[in-house]
Length: 499
Image 1 (cartoon, helix red, strand yellow):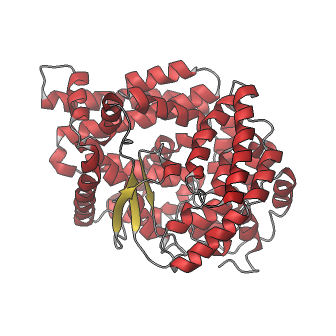
Image 2 (spheres, one colour; image 1 turned 90 degrees about the vertical axis):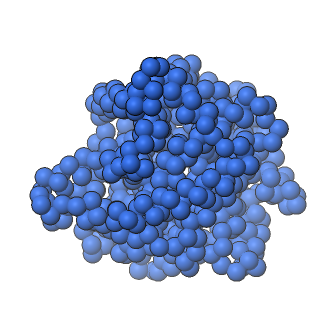
Image 3 (cartoon, helix red, strand yellow; image 1 turned 180 degrees about the vertical axis):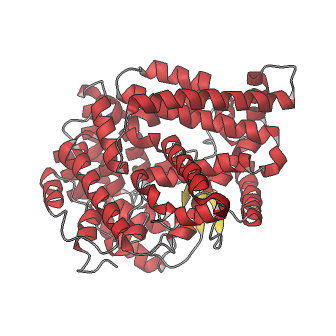
């Protein structure tokens, strides 16, 4: 629990309540909703700052989060533009996790739902700049939240009021949801405590795309040199289990990737249990997620969740969605979500030193680490270099590269929605609802650029570690030093190399 001596960390946590409660496991925030009204945000920003903390790295990390919150809410005022933080504020699925007795969690859920009317009032007061496309995608999340309050009339009435507000914005809001190039660079740079040159990053992405495209072609050529890579890749994508078989295969793959990670000694901790389940309705747009036992919770299982096709989908739409869970691709997802990815990272977060590292997590590091683990598996010969697996990793890398390129292009207003969809179809080999979901994510989540950006930062640091440590370098040592920082902003990774 955050004590009175941790006033700066408390002020930061008060401005990111859902993440503090769920990702850090700070359950003193159970039942509480963040005040995202214009006045509430101003009060929260005014409370930031104070005396330095003792550890130099922790001071840098805490200061970085304070600055990022100021840019997000004080400078860019995203709580007036983006419905996402307001909808995350309402979400009560966090109480489904078994971190406390069921009665205690049920009571917290009731208290949380009782706060929905005030939180919705705050959201409606704040959300006066919502672009029409963001409002439209927010309505999908709101419909997911409606499944959570079928027996709670006051909460449901409040949600209906927010839905009405969002429908109005979807009809009358600005048709342009882009932040603009300077605002995106400012937001991304503040969030990750680093200067961001979007032009240079976009140029590096072109080189990354070409390299991974070559790797995909080489892998497909090893499978069948007589046909184009696109034809071979299409065959890999259609090799997927039935909707009812996806979960069963995922269970087998978690066991496989955990055994491989342990054998290689790639991460400092690989204890605990990683279970497999289905995503909740609020996350039905996600291909896969992992909910870990958070640092301040009693130990418990992580949950690797995936989203099988909805029962009523037409056969062609179901098949297109299931292509995301092709047998080789699902192995890569398991590496990302379970080991050595998110689940293993979560075990390290529970051992991180100090409240700052255990509470404040960079999304670019969290997702960058898991995406780095996919490339690591290719480098380290997972499945003896099976070309189907390598092709699937290459295709997923191309997906994340395309996502970052489209985020930069779309948010900088140099790429249209149609152009972004074309890029996902051509460069990442997505089709149908999978391509649509990828495009929607680009303008719904400006910082969905995290995956490739974070991976590249980790690879750059690994090159430095090899050069500076010389014969003392090993992957195990490097990963332990990196994960010992928790999940720091990308601009602070250099601390892993030592003084």
